[in-house]
Length: 620
Image (cartoon, rainbow, N blue to C red; front, top):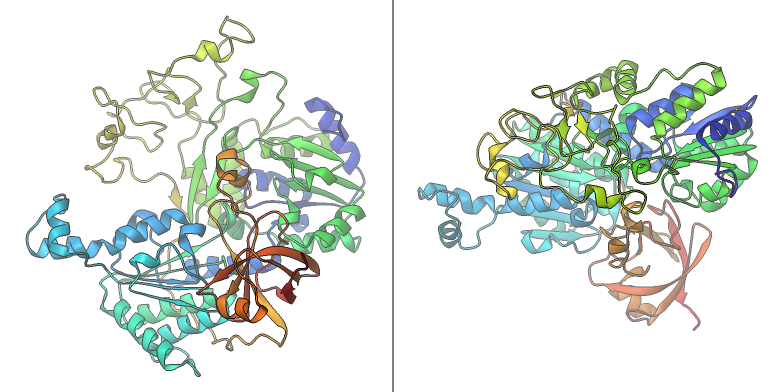
């Protein structure tokens, strides 16, 4: 799109090249774009001009997480392995909202106690009724330290709610209780000290203790505290693990890939170091203060945005290129476990409407690069880009093994995307023509856009779009692909681990001071929501129906002092922005904190650690 004018692919590339000619161009990548697309953008603008598109504070925390996992003492478990741990400490995360699949794995891990008791009485673990009867609700210990109540509290042995800095101090105190050579924490009250000892004893008593923490509160000292506990457990020779949660699909990928923060990119535009910008699958208004983004985009002579959603950033672009979503393209992402995983295209949009000119981000970036250089396109399929990414960095070298390449065949056949019973294919295009054309040909993967192809269970493979085996027309067909019922795939887990713990010794991190807000100010803490905080899913109608209205969370004592009840309108100022929001009174939030929902309409970006002032009941 050029304004409201639609262009063809060649015209769009020519226009983009014209806009960029002779300008100092920077590129802003994205943690929701594939490694391949980010790499193609970096190749286009040059390494020195590539920015990760992640906010400065978040990027700092992600780099710390990367370093702790790469150079730290403990291994990172897969989500499946999390279920096998028998003593867990969750520090600073509301997992049901920030990593729901890990929350589910922890529910399974606490049930491990029942299996253990049953095994001592020679009861097989498949005999669930007998296992539950003999265990009588016995659970493995789970401890949660968070800013507010969480949905996992019901299976926790003990919970503590405090300000982020105070949660970190509890973490540091646990590390010291496990290993006295870790820095000590002074000034803890008797109740907190008792809880710290309880957590430390449980972690030391467990055969496989686990620390879970992450970046969702935006508090660096919480991650440092988790690293200290990991080191303390290693020093005590415990068979422990650490799992650190990151915010987006490819946050870990970009931490490994490199690039400075979105804030640095905006500054480069505002100060005139650069005068043109290409933004890849990123809404900058979710990364930084709106006034800052406005100033940077206004200073740029050319703004080109490639995205699959209309955002506040695409509205400011001189030219918008239609990038494919995860369902319309292929690429590689790196999970919080450090596992590179390939995602595959679901359908070819142009088959259903030839006017759709959607292309993967990497195709746009590479084609634009070639147009500027006046040469022919030389990356024509995904494997070539993936190999280029792998060659660019030793830490990413293994990503080409994350999935078989496009030439992979079983018995000479591509893999079927659709089950044999899939029907109605002709009807899908009947409004265009009752004559069915040839199915689209997939150049980028080993899959066919069709039910034709290999779909059996005899041959070992990791890429299984659906589970079907002769005579097994239900999800129970999965047992035909596994090494045992409920076990692993015979071909091994999909993807490839890029981060393996080196078992090295980390230096101790220093203990932060206690939380002490200045008079008349409150610290903003981010409240994450499974429905509404994530950018892409919150655009889907079924999710939107479940998104609650924006609110401000306040401690009960604070609400009583202000004389407000649940639902009353409150006015406050955060990062220079005046807000009017209904109050949500919390029994567990600490004094001196206000909670704001992350990613909700009308809530400023990058609120973690911000200061709120002028809290009072709004005039009706």
